[in-house]
Amino acid sequence: MKRVFLDHNATTFPSKDVVKAITDFKDWGNPSSIHSSGRRARSKILQAKREIAKILGVSPGELSFTSGGSESNNSVIRGLVNRLISKGSTHIISSRSEHPSVYKTLTHIQESFPDIKVHYCPIDYKKGLDYNFLEETLKNNPVGLVSLMAANNETGEIYDIKKIRFLIEKHTLKSRRTYLHSDMVQTLGKMPFDIKDLGVDFASFSAHKFYALQGVGVLYHKKGSGFEPLITGGGQERGRRAGTENLMAIHAMGLQFNALKNLDSKLKEIESLRDYMETKIKSSIDRVMILASDRKRLCNTSLILIDSAHGETLLMNLDLMGFDVSTGAACSSGNPEPSPVLRALGLSLKEASESLRVSLGWSTTKEDIDSFVEHLVKVVEKIRSI
Image 1 (cartoon, rainbow, N blue to C red):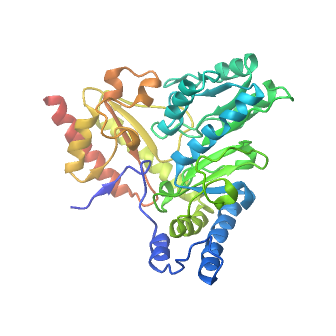
Image 2: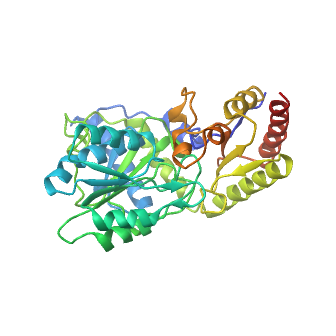
């Protein structure tokens, strides 16, 4: 049975270039060692950092390698707490629809540091992010950190980070700095962006979301945006992240960043394929709603609500037929409750439990989509008949 993978927001398969790079990899020295093997390993890390910096349009010194998006998010949020308290900028703005590595970290921070106050910006599935709430909160409180993702991993909705930076600058006193952090894990290979133009102080990225390896990521920290390291020990990454670097994975990630050049035609192709799929589903199945379809979304993402068809049941039946899809974020797998992100967006318990996330990849074909929709129609009919 040919399997059709339609869960690219959860992870992606390593590209052919990445597979070749790790197969041919030979520089196994410790990058902190000063002998020849160590120096060759160090050169691989520096080369990868230069390649990534060039693609992002930033300085190599503004990047640090991590184990992935969750560590990067934790590093920023936990690494700024003491600074926010010392400056009296103890208010943080985020949302309840953030990735758990942001939302749960903020929950822990607020419980551990009574001086910290977290404001959760409403995000409605019909209207999107409430920028008025954001502006009023900035206007009336000493906000030290705003942490909002660039694109939602479940609905695919893209948020206006540049507008958020504008509102921060409009309402922040010159004597106080408000940091802007964005979880940008879902953006690579799915949307164009200019990190400098967005105006973020920190941005988190993860390699396995764009056809590189799991277990490695990169954190952008704008020059002058210091933070206390989450992991202390050796002096790796200029003291920002201790521990021997994940050498081969970093090397592979650096190579894969080059694949992000000139992606415009590929992104349009994927968006066209997603729109084709959604049109076909709506014409074949009644009582279907697609979230955020009237707003700016990632080109590959479709969050589908199918009335009277439980998401987990859909997923299991489709799995048996050879299709990999999701009912929400993979980080919440094993949890029998519907996605907390969808509940935070204002969906009822019933609506959230009848969701199916389909996320296309660079290799998804029209034949894959035709086959998927054909089987989805059969599964929905079967479930509804029962």
